[in-house]
Amino acid sequence: MALDDVLVAIDHDLDNSLDRLFAFLRIPSISTDPAYRSQCRAAADWLTVELNALGFEAAVHATAGQPMVVAHARGGPGARGPHVLFYGHYDVQPPDPLDLWDSPPFEPVIKKTKVHPKGAIFARGSCDDKGQTYMHVKAFEAMVKTDSLPCNVKFCIEGEEEIGSPSF
Image 1 (tube, rainbow, N blue to C red):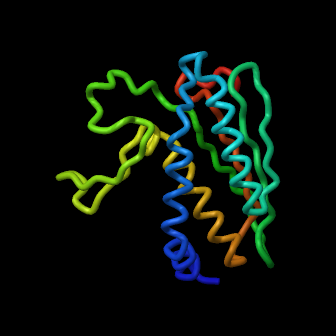
Image 2: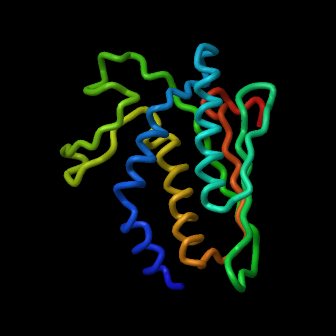
């Protein structure tokens, strides 16, 4: 399969992908505040379900702090070459001060701005790092669906990057 096939697969599923990303962004996985420990676990569980649904072997692993998600998948037919390791994190910074937000930080919205005239997603974690982590999940999903995953893949997604990754 060609890259064009992968891009078509991604575009075909765009609305569903946005719904799933927004569900992920709604989880207030704030690692700096012990009151959100269960939400960090919820984010790890959410990622594990997503990755398992794609055919990855994914599991949540306990650490001294927030849990870590580890997943792996074998490449498609004829896959050769190196293993690829993807690192990401699901924890986010606290949204304070709240009065600087134009919309609730854990209710994602798409807004057009001068900087983003075509629109961008605004929510805590939409860039750092839930959005980017999910982008990689979606890219691998499209490669799996089109049997074009060229190598073996591992994911390591932690929940403490925002506090210096002490359990990593």
